Image (cartoon, rainbow, N blue to C red; front, side, top):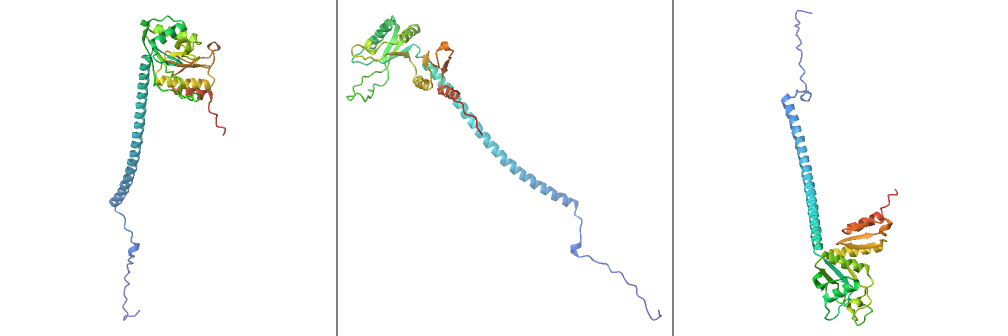
Length: 268
């Protein structure tokens, strides 16, 4: 090196990174705030979902409560109807119904009851009777065999007794002697039609009794009868071990039908 040469020191250059390469550490508070914001959004979504489901549950609960209330109302109404039916039947406990007697002009219902008592062998006095009357609408039945439409009226004759014991005696003797004909009581204007004596039933009782008789006939039950306002059916004779089955409503008949014809198990 010569004296005329001046040496220069090289100044090291500082490399400035590009803006994209700059990594600035996140502020911890900012990170926490971001996490809290996401948590609030999640909670808000859950709250909406829970509110929706709660509304659905409340709606179903209200529907169930309405159904339960309706069932309670139906049960109360059924109980009231049964109580009313029982009470109505109790008012008829001293009455009997004689069917099969032709109506004649100027007939005397009391005389018919007295004559019927003689024919079946019961001693009856005026004091034993409360009232005797024909019941039902005075409609002449249609009979295709009677072209002149002169079919006689045979509305039931209701006999009300002052004492239950006399009523029971009359019914017992009438059931024992089923050979009495209408002409035996009515006279010359009567027919050979058999006269039947039965307990007096309410309209609902008569309907159920009619259904029970049809059921007994269709399904091989030998007996169907009424005892003190209650309907019974029996498959065979009592001495054969066949029990008397009490019929309180149509469901009892349906139950017997289901028992006799159980559903077949699924073959699959």
